[in-house]
Image (cartoon, rainbow, N blue to C red; front, side, top):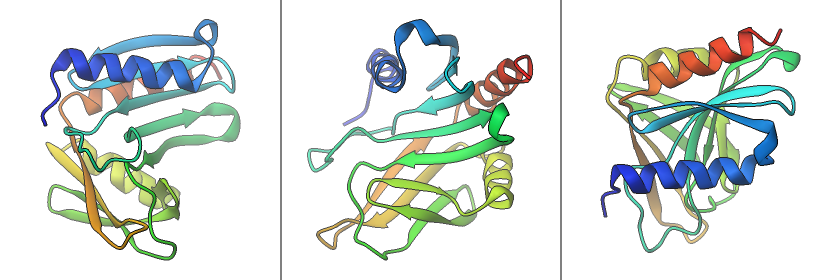
Length: 167
């Protein structure tokens, strides 16, 4: 089922409400399907989006985020919360346009394997219109969480600039 823009925005607000106390989080804007936020605890800044569709078989709300953590010297850290728990040891794959990336993680979380992979993923996000994370769930079924990328570059830039001011 397709998400309406209102449902997507509502979902983003719910996700951020779960991520930090309201007083500690600042909205930097919504850019098409992506939101950007600054969280004073840490501090950290991030771009975040929900997948394009939800399925009855989803175990939880998935999301994709790209975060900057100045005090940890991390910029552009890629994180996916998957819609289903993965089978232990199964491969995690990210497709962005014509590029494919191996991810690391387990359970319901996936990340870029290292900083170099995060940087390559962040660059690929800027030139594609869709991405999809694929894995095998705990029951042995292949699944994918797909995201529209309209607005991702602006959301990433807003998050990066917001945390650059905090150094």
